[in-house]
Image (cartoon, rainbow, N blue to C red):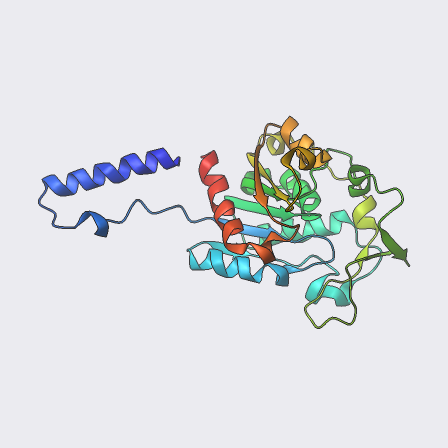
Length: 262
């Protein structure tokens, strides 16, 4: 529901109370309750659901339902890590969560690499999705892999035994921490040709680093892809991990995105 509609309804309720002898004071009148959403938060490369605990706590305290799964081979599921894990594996992780929990009207959120994952999820179960939010995320087209979209030549990660070792990994850091990820998650193309998926409302939220201009940030291929699809585009001044640096601001944007699309 649009903010303007909420305002009008609140005024109507206030007016009705005044003519019916309701002694409730204006500042004690609660506005129409904001909608409560079901969020599925999908983390980025080498991360895990652990990185979204603060976001979970903020949204849950506000009455929303939150799932923050960890993709196979990462986070607390690192014991399952192997070079055969691909993008389809991670897509199935989220699709099966939605199906087995029988989730409907899902606001699916993908951060960074998670954008490629939720693209595949949108293609598989569009009838379960209410809104998609891409957080500083990859927006691949049908038949495109993460490597295709990023154009990593040479790659900015070291590959060893089919696993990507990113420059930010620190195997000596205390848990929880980022871990290596299968190269196949970056090389397998995504499917995104389901007509119902193409019609889903979506929002692209770009994190603009301090000192970076919006013009510079908008040159990103994923931004351009989102623009071509007619998605809503928003920005937040932050580094790439706003869930750590600006959790309250980011949580407010997550709630506002589906509300503004209604």
